[in-house]
Image 1 (cartoon, each protein chain N blue to C red):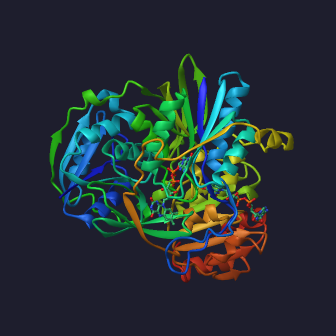
Image 2 (image 1 turned 180 degrees about the horizontal axis):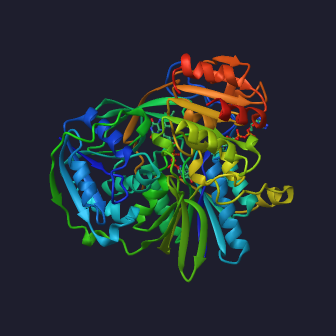
Image 3 (image 1 turned 90 degrees about the vertical axis):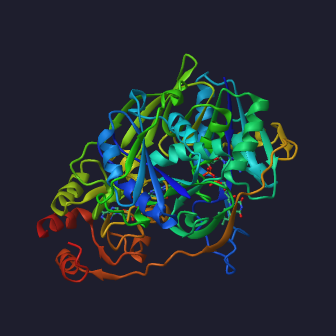
Length: 249
Length: 310
Ligand SMILES: Cc1cc2nc3c(=O)[nH]c(=O)nc-3n(C[C@H](O)[C@H](O)[C@H](O)COP(=O)(O)OP(=O)(O)OC[C@H]3O[C@@H](n4cnc5c(N)ncnc54)[C@H](O)[C@@H]3O)c2cc1C
Ligand SMILES: Cc1cc2nc3c(=O)[nH]c(=O)nc-3n(C[C@H](O)[C@H](O)[C@H](O)COP(=O)(O)OP(=O)(O)OC[C@H]3O[C@@H](n4cnc5c(N)ncnc54)[C@H](O)[C@@H]3O)c2cc1C
């Protein structure tokens, strides 16, 4: 089985982002960038399926600027076989991402696409579901377990009330949640080897996809700030404050 | 201009998240319709028809919709989308699952997790774990929107008397995706996203057994129990307890964080709570920077005291 994994380059999760003074967006100059954590989980899942003998080839794709190559090399070092970069300097919306990926999927014909459930910058939680709809494929979102058997997959999903399992025909799209696996770190030899793995570049135009945005970000502001309150010394003092000052219990 | 709200429900009752979504819909415009897709779900359709401001309920009832899949829901909505300028659903795991599919089917860029309605085309939504709020304008002819429940006051569940029209969904059931099973967390306590008081535990709790201390306090306060990602990952509590950027978003009157350091991803889920209490033995823990009342102490000492004091 062939698996396509998507990876996005985002501001590292440890960075506390700052809104730009002109409210046009957030400061990304000189900020540490990394692979979106949910995409790391997607890569790991594909690699585990390959180690189990279920997957035979892992292709990893990213849409973004030239620096997204680094993100792809990281995925190659973790065990993907080859990479596709759809190079653009534009901010591609999830609809555009899904349309580009549809073309990549049509070229590559994978049996399964594994994506992150959400990227930690845009926080949209859309791209995987949209790709699935454009392909008319089933989807298993927010996955905490994936089992492949007899040309089908069972995906256990993290939902608000607990867990749900759906059975999907293949091909299908899976999006990862936090508990699917714990991603490994790339070893030095694998990082060296990854430099020689194939990385193909193309543009959205090469794929014939229109990525003109449908939405406009008018402004980006800092949220209302909370300030630190007071320290209480004892439980009795805490309970007294909650009862008489805050009046919440 | 008509607006369609997709109801979240369990085939018996309408979810509270739907009432908040209706409030957002009414901020956009007047003619609000509700789609109820389920099985044996007449009581839900009736409840939707009784909501303040709802003028019509579309009711798709079909045995295959008992646990409706995203594939089937998106197909039903697409088949009934004609005439609607806005399609809304709660930004819960329910809404987030199928709404992007609808966007793709209608060739529309959805807008996720709105926290305010500026006008019929313009909405605010948090990005970067709530560290920035974007004002986004949509140029699509139809807006596909998910709504953050904590940002809107629920409409009244009574006072309406909408017409109920039944919709045939038999041609919209997906064969490619089938519900197999579910494992829901059973609890007598209020739901996290609706609770007035929440007490959450983090890695500092040390074990699942120790969460007993949190639960006893929750019972005294009529509170819901939440957790940090670290506590869920460690297996102390089930996944649906997770509060945060990638878990549940909550905004209770009182949020008590015990043994939680206050990572931005956790804060993203609870910093809109009215009053925040932090109990942590490390006085440098970032949670204290946003807490109204901080208690620097060992949780194993103070939780039993707190239980006694309530
Ligand atoms: C401040 C700010 C301003 C913005 N302004 C604009 C604007 O003016 N116009 C505009 O069009 N967009 C704008 N955006 C949108 C931005 O480009 C988002 O990143 C984009 O909408 C994609 O959404 P997402 O990454 O949240 O998708 P999600 O649906 O959350 O992503 C889910 C998964 O899809 C996959 N995926 C998503 N994107 C990619 C990718 N590029 N390559 C590979 N895999 C991917 C990954 O596996 C990811 O885990 C803005 C965003 C921000 C934060
Ligand atoms: C992509 C991504 C998504 C994420 N999403 C979420 C999310 O949705 N929600 C979330 O919560 N996290 C999320 N995280 C994880 C987040 O970054 C933190 O790792 C997590 O919140 C830490 O949990 P914690 O505070 O319980 O643990 P820690 O950071 O380990 O803190 C434990 C705290 O307990 C205190 N403590 C220990 N023992 C005691 C004691 N005896 N008495 C009193 N205090 C004690 C310590 O001083 C410490 O401050 C996400 C991370 C990533 C990368």
